[in-house]
Length: 446
Image 1: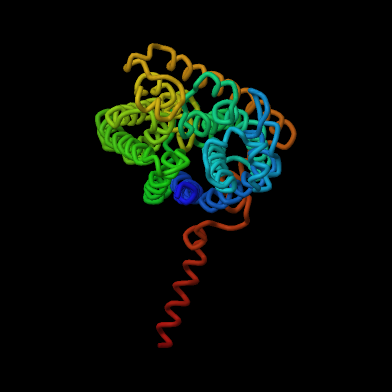
Image 2: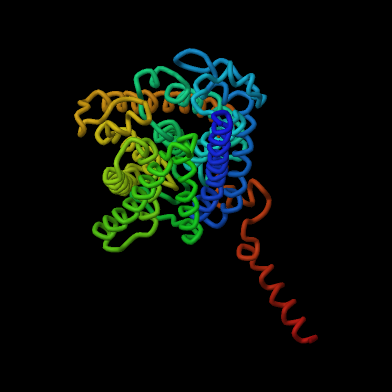
């Protein structure tokens, strides 16, 4: 009976992680709607299309090099085995010891981790929005998936030096979100603001997205996908931990929505929907590190604080002249930092023992040790991504250029990069006129 029970357990766990991986991949659909809705109509088709393109680039690069660099056996800095992933259990047994804790097929492990890398890259693209050349997405997408994401992933998840210190980052507030957000911040600064965003006196002009319904639907898709993101990181369902993780994830998101809408209402005099949506995402980002380590009440605090932090920091960045169209660093960076540090306060002894990583937080008698480890992880990851992203983008700027021409930006990237509109009927009046003529002609005949 024991071998049969082990097989059933493994099958159930594998099925859950496969479903979770699909949910995380589907988060790309959420990013499409979020980014397209938050940008202008003339760039909507470009934003949607480049999301599919860059996930394809990420998938091929992660298969060839990224997975081995992240999870392969190596040294405290980087993995050195398991390149050009072949999907066999024989290779997995010798090349990916950091993933040996999960008794599911290595192909499912790969797909799940690929989905995470794709999310981190999608976050980075927020800093490029509405002004970067299409060619930039090819080059930076490959280099991000080889030189940036795998390094942070190996440090924390692949048996690297931060893992040795007991760094707690259950599903990636640092690995996925802070990494992508920091690259986005560097890109935002190096690309400079969009045309018309700031006046000569430094004051900011609002450039609203073209479809708030798309943005809202995108956030809801991401909210649902986050259950795969966080609860799937248990790499199993039999233990029941995934239920607790799903609970804390949902409570945090709910608190982020309510707290951010209320604070926007108090500060701006109106209940601002885009602020609320950013609050939801920020809360989800923050709880990602701590979802398996904290009690439900703490997840509400973490979610509410993250939403409020994101609201005020997004305003501050805008006043400082940083044109971040999707508030990528406020939502994923600031919230990622807070979420990572929150473990140092709220991680409970029972959950820490169950997960088996690190020590309890300050509020549970653990002292400042875990908080110090969390801060070390944030600082080292932030500095590494800042420096490497800057070097890569500086070389690209000097050799191939990063930004489209003024004329191309004004016309829109749909036309300048792809030769067509995402909304051809709306942006080409002659088509509307012809359609009306055809309609009148048809009705006159009938």
